[in-house]
Length: 251
Ligand SMILES: CCCCCCCCCCCCCC(=O)SCCNC(=O)CCNC(=O)[C@H](O)C(C)(C)COP(=O)(O)OP(=O)(O)OC[C@H]1O[C@@H](n2cnc3c(N)ncnc32)[C@H](O)[C@@H]1OP(=O)(O)O
Image (tube, rainbow, N blue to C red; front, side, top):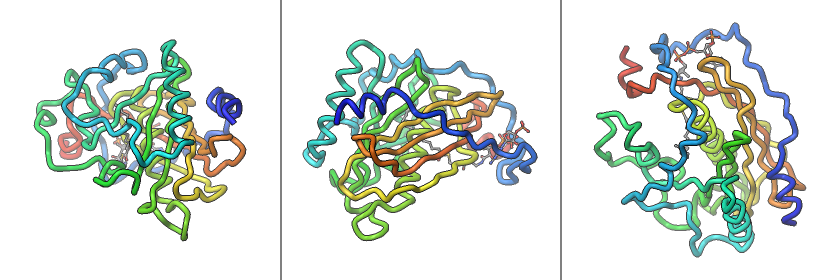
């Protein structure tokens, strides 16, 4: 099984990236955000990820993880030893994912909010996941074990929970490519339902960067690589890294 997984982790087929129609009218919601202040990709400045934080790192094994999840996690940790892959910590608050050096003044104090995929206190009932980044391949993978509180059809993960883990994995990948970004378009084809309690590999990569636009693609497969559960394309837009979203929306 692991050979399939390594093969799987080695290469997404070149999925046709859905090119958004350039004539798409601009979003009226946050029209005319000031052009982003270009910020260099973070691919190789991931050392800040290992900076000690007070916050709990939720991307570590716990008693709710199945043997399959544990085995896959151990294999990716092994691949981190030569620096090819980097384990990405995961916190209950979005702000904790931003390195102190990149935080805006308004983001210094913690607020009583929860990062959506980390909004359940009981282990194993919601999103159990761990992400690993491959800077040289511009890829982010996520080991995902959907818990019983993510149910859609009886016994299977809700399509919105799959969209959430895809958006978070692809979003993490886009952040390393372009710093502060937001999802402009996410298109998902659901091919096979994901059984609750199973373990899947969400494998995303950057396909192209055009100015502020980051185009990415992603596949969600069973850990033996045999079953394709979903495939997605996404467009993320780089934001002005010197202003908070609230400031940009009001400008
Ligand atoms: C740190 C690492 C930790 C990793 C683990 C944690 C990961 C956590 C990750 C969490 C991740 C969670 C992520 C989330 O959940 S983000 C939440 C969901 N997303 C939103 O709410 C975004 C709402 N939309 C907006 O704010 C604006 O529309 C944005 C900011 C996106 C663009 O407004 P802005 O005014 O700035 O730019 P623009 O309108 O001039 O457009 C610029 C260009 O882009 C093209 N365009 C725009 N939209 C579309 C479209 N839909 N299809 C095709 N094309 C589109 C447009 O034509 C133009 O092209 P061109 O004319 O220049 O050629």
